[in-house]
Image (cartoon, rainbow, N blue to C red; front, side, top):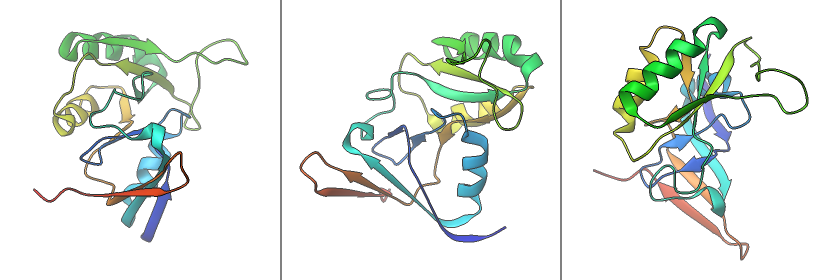
Length: 159
């Protein structure tokens, strides 16, 4: 599959256009669509804009895991990267949230900024992890709707 443009929201966008996505639980499918696009654009309101991940979004980074692996994956992430890892529980029904892929979601509340590219790769290498809600080097541009009705645009920083 190849798309010219994909447009999606985000739970948080940092200064480098690294995103946290998956607050709604569909991170794997959203990452597949974004990865198949030539140009990925984010649209969000001003509350999702931050200098560093974790400033605005306090619920943690979603990580989709195979159900039988959620305990060892949780322990491994906490041991390696610190913070707190919790199984996301459903609100309107008993038990954990189940993704469209039949998996569980862990929410990792990290303690401090990290090298997100390295962290994303390391977490994805843990057996049982399907995908992370870290979208690193994927978005080309972000549009933020501001309180006054204006639009703030952020492009990928030139290094």
